[in-house]
Image (cartoon, rainbow, N blue to C red; front, side):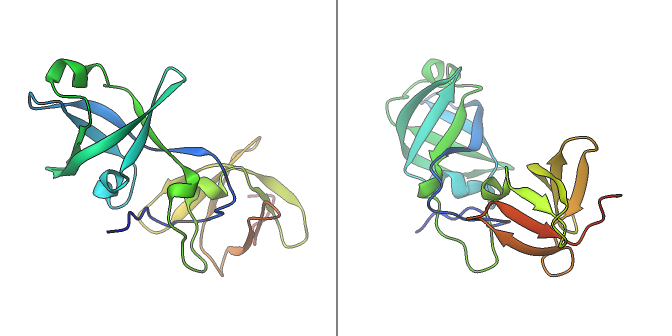
Length: 180
């Protein structure tokens, strides 16, 4: 089965960067399993990536996933070489990251959030609104959060508000007033 992360916004396979998919949040049982706070959608997609990079205090180490699954409202995983509760406990607070290139391509008009972060947002007339700092998931639609003063929140509604996304140029065109 191919691992899929939610394509909420941009995909550029040319982008080389590590992206955070989750964080080890606790231990599960006595045989080295860990609880994982997953940022993927659906939540258990994180365990479909066979190799994780664990990042703690700026130090990265690669580790193989032996097993993993949804459990209750979260995700649990067994990591190769982590065979007891004490070793698993040492990993609490560690980020789970993967190389951007490991994500599958999205379909037309779909984007990964990570690819939208850092893009400049402009009006159709070319006026600069800001740079995408991060995105928020809301009930109705996702929202671009632009860094700067003032901080702007722009709904990511393709066709109505978002008129275009050009990953190569690093620009999103939004039908949005600079006065909002």
